[in-house]
Length: 290
Ligand code: FES
Image (cartoon, rainbow, N blue to C red; front, side):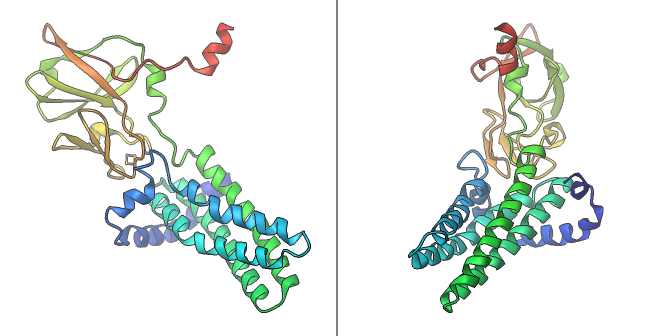
């Protein structure tokens, strides 16, 4: 998988496919497919249907008298592929290059699996159950490999993870000074640190100052290099839009909101503290304490 991540030879294909996916006229449906409404990516949830039905079909194929039921399950799985695949493609088109190379391989293996299941369905329909079962088992093996590659993409490469999740664990509770009010020109994005955690600071007017975690929850993009407009900041990497007042992800591909800080001005100096409740201690800390 490390070799696939570094396979620059795939980049021409990556660019063409990404251009095609981004050109799809999906409108607001694109955010729905990302899973912004759900709070995390939709694709892993949607693949449960084809995988579940195909595993079930394989079990039934091993039992006597279940031919028609297995055939139906293979068909249901095939019908569920398209929405799951579209959700996956729109997520894929907003990844980093190394992730996209692996994602392309994930898709290629899964397309092969779908081809095998389509062959299995057709063979069963034509009264060739032995061939249908054989193609079904081959499809299950292939989709399992595709799932393993997807696991690498999701967990090793953190595609779809909330890249701002650690912030509440890293910032000590309480107020932290971040600079004089005059250091923050109205309407401009400024990068500062709170407890060594980079934050985005935007003074909206007078002493009204907004502070969000700097690293975008989508892929860690630098929000201080983004565009501030209409009370929101737009990430420079993939265009997620976060509301400055509360960190809400107004537009995807980010599916998680941005950690936000309360602010106050004391003697002309801006202070910030995490707006969210103090998190539980990380597991590592608890273990040491025990
Ligand atoms: S890093 Fe992708 S939208 Fe911010």
